[in-house]
Length: 138
Length: 138
Length: 138
Length: 138
Image 1 (cartoon, one colour):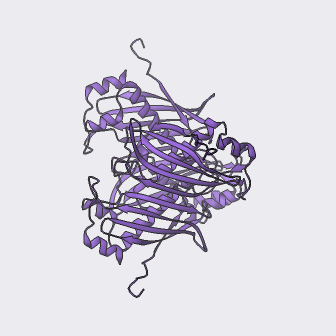
Image 2: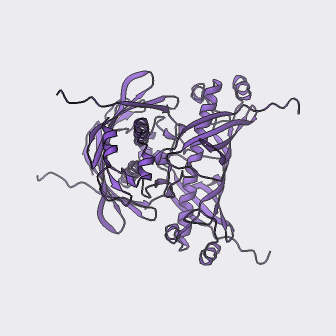
């Protein structure tokens, strides 16, 4: 549709840490949720809405749902590349999508999403300040 | 249906570890994948098919897909209770489902599933030995 | 000396989790600090002074120093056994010592200590309530 | 002494990850061993001796001893800075030392060391290839 914007895709990259591997010699499947989190943090910092600021302002973005598909794997020595974008951006919830690659290789290794709700610091669902909703939409 | 069996539900329980909590004072969302893994390990040990034996026999069960929904949370001091069962059991893949509770409270906090494929020790998809397929079905 | 008491040694045990292993197929060296923490939590629960209660009463026991020596290793499929005792017990600090074994084998795999200071919930060094000092000494 | 060289100090930096914090709102004490590992990996990459290459050549550098002192703490939103250098470099063992800072602040938060032994891929103690001993000494 004419007014459908392409989402802003922001890429972050970092090395696989040895502690993240398991006895199958690859990154343990739970580690990708931490990679997603790092990618999401980077996304927010790039858009100027550091999640640390969001917490300092009394808001939280707890995770309400996640889904991941594992196609390939990463090893120690690889450099991780995560592409992240906002898939849904509403006043009370936000959904990020992710694709994980190995630097220097265009095959997608893992895909997934994380859905979050906006709460106050006591965990009550709330509306996000409009400035952050706008920022995430940029 | 008459020939639909109820799945065998096996419960495991253990304490929340301080290292598993995060700055929101609750268990970090990635930690539940580790709880699922512990519950799955316990499930297999209870049925006599310890995953360590599976690996020693040259097979692997890597995770191909996961999904989790977070409704409530756990804190340090809580005792975790995970109910696990096999949702789908085929010669090349197996799917476990999980429900997480806090001991002494019947509210479901987190639900989820993990899907696995049977591979050899080189990661090639293979058929599971029939004895394990039968065991998981029990 | 006649009035030197033998310390109370409390043993805890649990399974190695797959997520705790690394690409060397053994438990990652940082994982032992989490095992120590679990052993320390168990120690306090056994003596009736659950660390969750300590936090709820407004006190904290942050770690100020640790040391570990690694002699052997643990694998997935092993059951960990940790022996813990209080090595030093003062009003402002406490020191625990640990020995890690594999169940069914008396060889020590890892030894270590963790030193802690008593603080209030704002992180200021404080004196521990006498009841807890007495309890830890028991 | 005239022939005592100043060690090469290599600095690495990265963001605190939310998963690394605990319910005290600071980085969990075990997380610093992972930071040390990341700093050590960076050190080797900078000197051209990537640890992944060492493993591919059939050698391992397991950790035999560690020690850490915690003076301050790090929070989500902080950027970690680790200074690492080789404190002892022999044919059969190597010892790294570390200092952890928060970017933009010169106060040392955590100090520590990790000692490693050179082994073959079966875990037998061995002598390091001379090229790596020389490289680490540079």
